Image 1 (tube, rainbow, N blue to C red):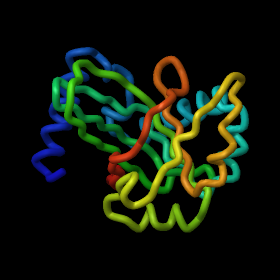
Image 2: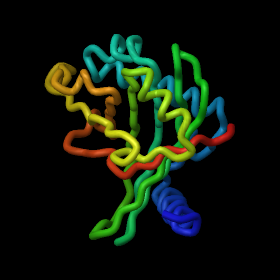
Image 3: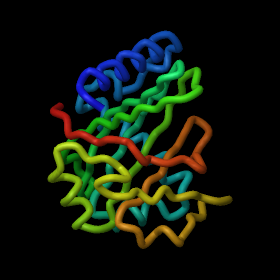
Image 4: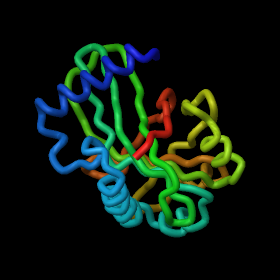
Length: 187
């Protein structure tokens, strides 16, 4: 997607977010480093509550990318956007945006959180050295499903990059991060 296309997607998202009041209190739209970090803390605590071994998984990770608020909106043409923090050893080292576009029947808006866990140093290094990293092109993110009581699908735990998607009700199923683009931003 070119610069004009991304601006249009962000414009649609902003319009929808303003119309539906989804931006109230979210650091992703406020855009400050302190706000993103505070919301990332809240998102991680929620992740730990919903994923039984989530705390240990993050502890063992080489890096964790947390997007507290990713807004998706569309009227035929859809898009999503959010800002997040990359943490290594518990400390924020960089900030990133995520954006994706879609075409097809869609009407409305929704908000979700994304937690991407880098289990291998090589995968984290490749991510950090890229100028614009696209899921499914530059690397695959294994979206992990969680069953009753927070038990994870252990077949994916050996993958280099794990992804978790949460909506307002909890962990989401049958979603993908394919096509999402992650870009480093200055804060």
